[in-house]
Amino acid sequence: MERVRTKRNVTIAALTILLSAFILPAASAGEVIDRIVATVNGRIILQSDWDEALCYEALLNGRSLADFTDDDRRAVLDRLIDQELLRGQMKAAHFMPSSATEAAMRVTEARKLYPEASTDQGWQSLLANYHLTEKDLLAHVRQQIDVLRLVDAHLRPGVQIDAKTIEAYYRDSFVPQLKQSGAGDVPLADVSAKIRELLTEQKVSELLVSWLHTLRSESDVRLAAAGASSDGGEQAR
Image 1 (cartoon, rainbow, N blue to C red):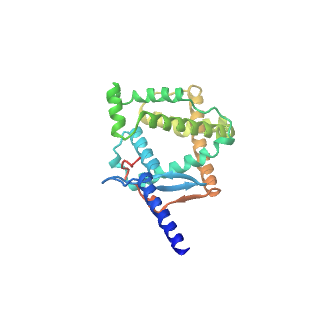
Image 2: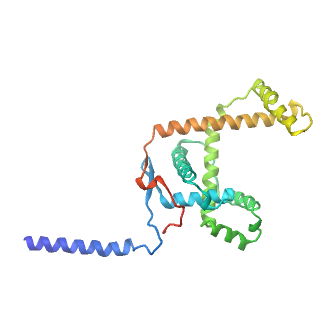
Image 3: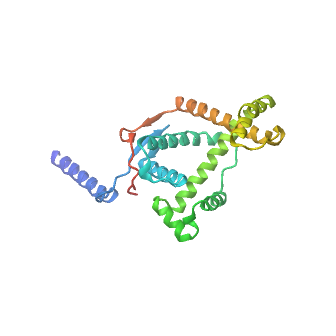
């Protein structure tokens, strides 16, 4: 009986090794096996997610990945965690999610900001330089639109900017800036709506920081030991 059990255990071990050879092929030289860098309420953020987010932000800001400091990289991971926290709030929110068509239109407009992207070949080359595909880009843009809509739906209705606040900003900030730039006088009535929108955006940003702080305190956010830094390199997929 003992021999049968031993033979069975050896067979299982052999099968496990054989399956592992197919499921987890050895990484070639220079490749990094994907790993978990953080979890947010049980939802996983992978190293490849972090690297792709770094590439996306580098493209948006026209920066080289080599220019990102450790603090920059950690800030990108923090934003990924914040996005995951906000994504968890979307199920209960009432807003119109973005469509693929809308995201494509945004990408088309953004593409005009890059002179080298005037041709399709140049555009594809630019994306390749940042290790991104058109599909990756569209996914990030759709997520960005959805997050902005969620924030607006949740926070903007509660922001009220009264006339006295607008007048104070006009007097204490807007007029001094005009004088410093040498521009002529601009009546309050002409810029009141713009000042209101500016102050509203500032208040929404403040409320967002507070909301994210609350969400983090109420959530299970864990960083993996290997999640303290990222080399921003291309990951094995």
